[in-house]
Image (cartoon, rainbow, N blue to C red; front, side, top):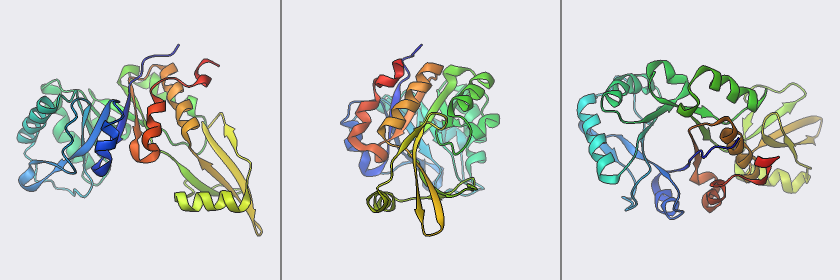
Length: 263
């Protein structure tokens, strides 16, 4: 059964204004730690209201100059001013653990809903958790089911990041090589490969030969993202996030289930 999983458009910098124009729920990934440990907003100050406050830790290194109490008060004030309904701690860098362990108890205390990456779940037992959408082996559905068995489903959110990676065959290395959009389209023009959809990985792929080498390219497009979102809806996940920079105005198509949701 499909649920009404809200899809948030993640926007930062110059993407904030066009993302807000889509009239979809938006994660404003525009906040970080500024001078003297104060909350700092980067990028244009969009006039849109609602959505989520996105706090990122890029460039922050431990130990942090952090007055957690003051920072939470500033976050509360910004949430009230902009009518944000919660906070996403986009904690990926070396200061991630310190940031989450310092802020999560205070976010709990003030009953502010918040999200953290699933890998930091042990530091924030009352948070909602961001699940990665990229998968290079195994089963996408099995991955979601495993998380749903471990955590309350309504506290899980799919974090959709567009993947495009090349692997050498026949023995694929685990991570492969990230391909730029320019390289990806050059390969398509040069080799004119036939693409297929992998039900297991919930992604598209093609293979091609270059000299004596065979390569496997795994990638997302709007159809695979729609399929991933449909699977999240079937599982009953509480939310999903899609980067505006990955799909631009096409993000609007992710609001409603795609036709394969009913197959």
